[in-house]
Figure 1 (cartoon, rainbow, N blue to C red):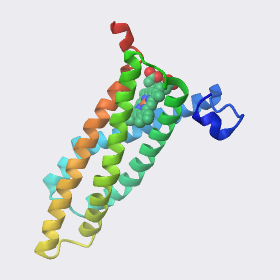
Figure 2: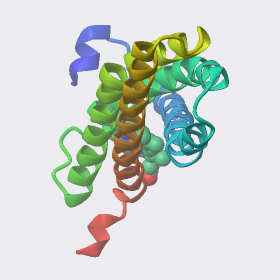
Figure 3: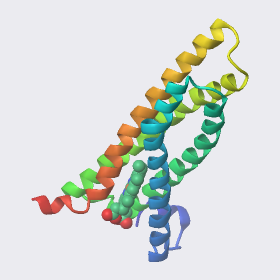
Figure 4: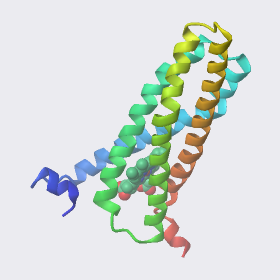
Length: 175
Ligand code: HEM
């Protein structure tokens, strides 16, 4: 009996069909989220910086923001479901690697929502309205640095998470 059985009553929420569905959602959403963050950190942000920003960057962020936010939520919700159903009592090295990966992804999500999202939204709004006063330009520069910091830190945490998710099943064999 686990916490989900208590919530949902007698329905077996750990039926194999649910697990297959959750794994499918988890992997697709996780790949989308991590891929978006890697692309932002390695290609889009450096290109935006080299081009001196501009309205196109705001327009892009308004699409990338919701897509990566929804993927992050789906990854974390399906991951929590899989964790409590299949690995909650796993005290092997693999179980700890999995936990470390999950914590890295949770931190990445919190960082994205707390630092990256508000800075990105305000930056998009200011860039859309054009750079006016010197105060506005200074604000845009500050927000740009915040977005860059958030994206880089998020991408680093996601790298840890993706690596952990990919190897946790096999590290036990290392001895
Ligand atoms: C960057 C985000 C993430 C990515 C790309 C990702 C990717 C993956 C992949 C590819 C697997 C399959 C590994 C295998 O079966 O060998 C997996 C499994 C798993 N992930 Fe994640 N994951 C992410 C975040 C999370 C989070 C936040 C949690 C929990 C809160 C989590 C919990 C799990 C669990 C429990 C499994 C094992 C499922 C099973 O045994 O069927 N993951 N993940």
